[in-house]
Length: 370
Image 1 (cartoon, rainbow, N blue to C red):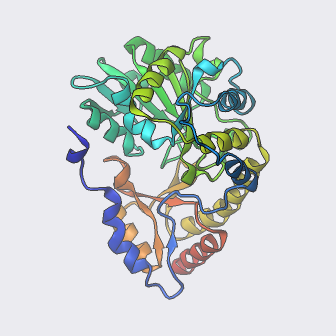
Image 2: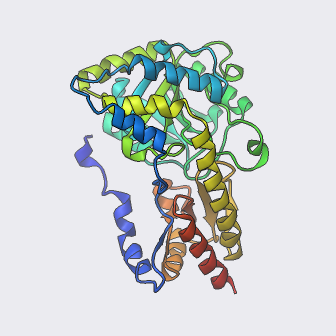
Image 3: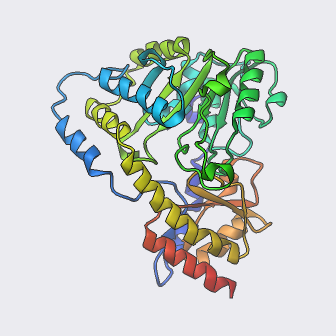
């Protein structure tokens, strides 16, 4: 198939609910899309300004400073201290990588791409565009022969599922049995909230406790959109198996997939500063502590959601009924069916709204529960 064969963009179905919610006398509260609303930190904006004399083509492989910054960040923040610059590669945001990875790996007809049952839809889209077969399966023991690429998402979007070291290690063992590339989308890894993730760092697929000393066919994917408010910069990267990274680099050179030079400079600065990441996480913590009890008071059950930027909620009825009810309150959420056939009764509340709007949503939800 080609991109022309894809179904209509799913978010178009939300437009009528958005229009109705926007007619609320106190305005729309949009909790549907996980797009950051807080300012990009000044030190990153200054770095971008300092690099605007970008007269030459940027490097697909990344500048030496950016590659070293990625290596240092994995060691400092993810407990992965054995990478070199040959193990890392910048990307133009993470969505393009998710969508293109099956194609860049040369997958096609007869190949299976596994992704989570409840999942960001681009995993499936990428498989279909490449002509491969997408398959939604969570349990490693159920990943079938013929699988060439496995996506896991930890913490998960939309459900916040977070894989432990032991679970990741089991996934690695099964991927090696299949001879498949295992790619872990980890862009919410700085946002742990509940259970062990309230105090422990969320592990990477490249954690030495997971890999057993070998990164062969393993990839970690990360984005600065959430932790640094760089969604508009399209700033992301991957790390892992040097052989796979080199293969992807060659393909990306041919296709001209290179982050702009000023963005690469800004990324290096962002990766070197932990203070702004902690500040942003605290903002999300405050919003989450306001919104979660209000959602529960309004009759929703929160499932998972131990990490990440979302509350994965259900009233035990069709998701579109819940979306309709919320629209009457002037609140827009994300419909669970957008994330697969296994979430027809769930909706996704995003924490990426201004604090004042989160407070307003909580007030409306509490009032509706009275």
